[in-house]
Amino acid sequence: MFQIDRSANRLRKLERTSFSEVGFREREHLQEWLATMPDALCEAMSEGEDGLLIIQKEFDGFDGTRERLDLLALDRAGQLVVIENKLDDSGRDVVWQALKYAAYCSSLKKAEIVGIFQQYLDRQGGGDAAGLICEFLREDTLDEVVLNDGTNQRVVFIAANFRREVTATVLWLREHQIDARCVKVVPYRFGEEIFVDLQQVIPTPEAADYMIRMAEKDSEEKSAKGAQKWSHQMRLEFWEQALEALRAAGLERWQNISPSRESWLSSSTGVSGISLNLSFLRHEIRSELVIARPNEAENKWIFDQLSERRKELSPKVGDYLEWHRMDDKKMSWIGARASFQGYSKENWPKMIGWLVDHYRKMDEAFSEPVRGLAARMKQGGGS
Image (cartoon, one colour):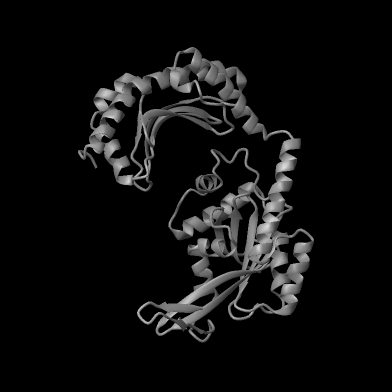
């Protein structure tokens, strides 16, 4: 690894060192780095967008054994990922150790996984495990989600150097469709500063990309031949009926919108980044104004301006409106919701009637004020 010296137009070589030499330890340092910044590992494995959710560290919840795995994570497919860290050398037994952990974890059920994550969150200061898993998996509820189907646990080995017996075994496992990976983590020193480089060495990035493309091709072919996921098909049918009703009601913005497998449909207010959405969830429906422009300050300013007019705007919708500024996120939203058993088709006529009525009211209440605020921003009078 080299540093660029701009002034001299030269490269300066960084000194490769070892973790033990610079005083770093496996659990106290490397494990903690990855637990708090899993994105570093994801980038090394070319999974920057997919990501990993760390759900436990030093996990010892195995019956009849006192062994502990270093880190336990979930990937976007709901599969468990066993992560084993070593510092300067992988050792000889790391593969056997990790495979035992993967076998132990293969029997974990959804409720157990949520409980494991909740324990981890409680130790870190709190949080809602089920909600965070839903957010990570981009699902509305865990009811339909399959976690850890028992056949596809992944194993990641991390070390500065891998012994030949380790790399040979990992390659053999991959040939037998077990997702095992080796990620090299190497420390470098430059003066008083320490840098860390993480690179996936098995499979190589080129091979990984090829395998991902082949897996996607296989998945696409299977999807084309098989039936759609039940919940997706349910949403598609619901939106087909809802769109017919919205168009029949003369709501022109829905004329060119197609039904979707997603839990929501969006229509424009005439202002970029601000939409009127309808949501169809398993246990409720919503009509929402979503303020999601690229600029967070603009979103909060628009929300605040509308919030100052609550007494005027809320009666136009009629129901209790929820006002969510969401200071921890870029977007904000305002909306009404109603509880229904959404996947019971006998409820759909009432649900669709509610959505049509509340969309019209939300449109009449908010679209014109939003356009007025956008015009003020354009003239330099806002945010």
